[in-house]
Image (tube, rainbow over all chains, first blue to last red; front, side, top):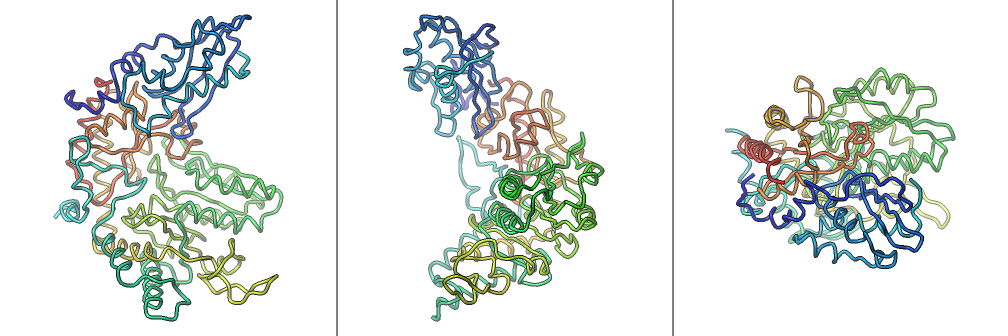
Length: 132
Length: 405
């Protein structure tokens, strides 16, 4: 692959490459009490998000696992970071624009679902996703 | 002259520059590109002859009807159907399979069995699930063996006196597996089951002969065989078609209508309600003419050579897995592969940055993905205009992929 091609560099930004190679929040979260999972019907990608929500509603920890592409993985990793330490309502207010601002990439419409899947899963987790 | 050298100039889209590179189109399995002959035939039809067909008593109506019915003759010849009445036009393979499922579905009883295979595209699965749910029928799937070919012994065990339908693909859109249609039809017939063959990945790439295959239904799409979107073919063996009530109602498919009943039209129009895709039929005629001029045996040999080159080349790249039957076994013009550590969508996006179009994902075959233990694969598919040089470009690009993300 020639490094001169600029299109993949714009799509696969340094942030996405870094988060794909070395995700910071990937892996199981024992004791999570708000858990949800969903798939992207277009590609079959699957993301499972696990949150530890304190009794007062603060999200103490967030981790994810899944079978997903670089963009979806990076999005999930960024999202886990964004919601950690926030209250439930603040976490629910995180929007796709917040994630895109961190990713610093030109996401084409065909790949936008890769970014939004983790947000869909977050909404499910906050709306009563339970269990291990 | 090699086939690609002969044909490339006929495909205007191959002039496109994508991501700064000349387009390399390896996604004909999803939808093929169109030669100028097809594009011009459809334009000329719209510019000179368009009207509705069959009941327009004026010059254009007669011309449109003649052109539409000429397409039926072209298809009959192309697939070796015994009569033109066996050729029913649909909107495509999915539409044809849905029509067959609905038509047969009305005759199913509780406990009747529909046998499919693990290779099926969702289009040959979901319509059967819908009718099975409505009629209380049961769906069973014949598994594949480790090498991607169908487990015929297991299929035999699934066939019982309750089996009403055996629906299966001719060529897998993922593994390229070519199923032994004649053999399966013989087995199905021994339990008096109706055979339905999904020919979407076969008809564009090899000679298909209904009189030799012997199946009851065979469906395919024009847009995967150099023709336009929006039209497909449902071949039905005459005695079988005769035995079924129409699956869907509307104009064209009746002789006489009262408020509470109707008398059905003759074959094939009985199964073609509404205004058909007329310009698309004209385009299909042109596509068939184009393929026939090349010769389907030559097309098959050309694509087989590209498939072999791709499989051998990919298999030699460290970290690349190629799915499907070994080269010694007959294969369609499909190569699904995975690059270790890379998601198929990222593979496709990175190849697109080199101007190379491949498919990535589950290929509308989720049960097969589950069987293979993957979320999806990347997939290169071939057509008459693809060249060995393009395959070399793909191999070079794939070899560099792992370093690029």
